[in-house]
Image 1 (cartoon, rainbow over the protein chains, first blue to last red):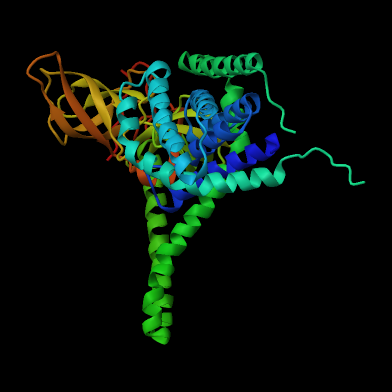
Image 2 (tube, rainbow over the protein chains, first blue to last red; image 1 turned 180 degrees about the vertical axis):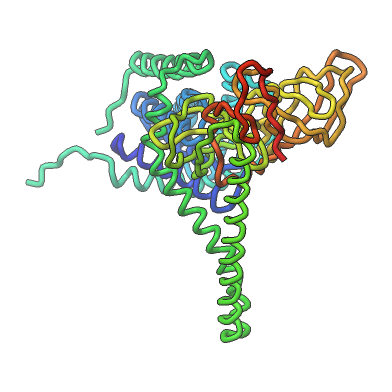
Length: 168
Length: 298
């Protein structure tokens, strides 16, 4: 899949987040589908390409969220590396096989957010607030991974560049 | 064929990206982040952010105004059509009335605070993250340049401060964001403190820090800006104390305030550009006289 397509998918995830949050007037929660996309990137993309895409998407997320620039960027890059490292050691196949990756990724995502909040934002209550969203976030990942991963795989297989074949 | 990067390349790229992100965070924390970073992000994302927000709000209104009534229509189509029409009229007039009231309150605020140069702005979007309390506004046509750090107020009270400006758009850091700190004074007792946003995802609130335990503070006390932080003008209503807890030990009480402005339903706000040189009721400020004490908002 081309890099630009990855960015488009990421933007779409961010737009869905924003749409759901506004349409349902959610104040305390957003689905955060970008996490699901980052986990998929980790499970399916090359280190460099995935890390670059994660960084750009994280920075865009900073723009949407009004967070200090770099906060979600750092979160996205680290989450990609965690997910990539997990996927390179364990083979996650099928819907049920990918759920552990989703759960581990969601937990890692919250842990990283809490860590970034503590280290860089000087916000003493950040961890508490992140932990407060543990179950809703896990639920979103559990529902989204079986639905979104196959869809992304399908899009990926359609867009991936194959070596030229000699028709003769 | 998919290209795979070498472990060395992967590590190098990772370090570069993590270093960039950490660099941005550190610069932002120290207030040295070049403005073009945030402005650029805002400029690039503004059309998407505004468009998706407008579409989502449209869907929400459609749902509440129309789809919720679909079941009733099945019972009696003709009657329902009539009811719908009437309801639409009522809703329209109620909406207009609400808008009217909001705008009137905004005008009243402008009239009440003749000591402040104000520029109107319309709230167009909110932060997508539940961890940060930020809204985006489009500045109204008017004189006066809007800058970072300028206070933002609404008829109910203080809203926050400008964080980034890009053209006619600006990002406002709400007083309930943990990055916000406002020097405050209790109207009744004169007790001092600093209001810091709690950042809670499920409500809008701020806690008062450095409120001495010996000071008189009770639930319901109005909290005003002291003006001593050099950012917010003196005498603006921030909110009301919702909780006061004086521990057995320690020098400070723990208190929490609920903002006077309805931060969850902001539509129009004012950016405070600076003083006008008048008193709150429009009289000329005398040079030799002591600085005028602004009347608190109602």
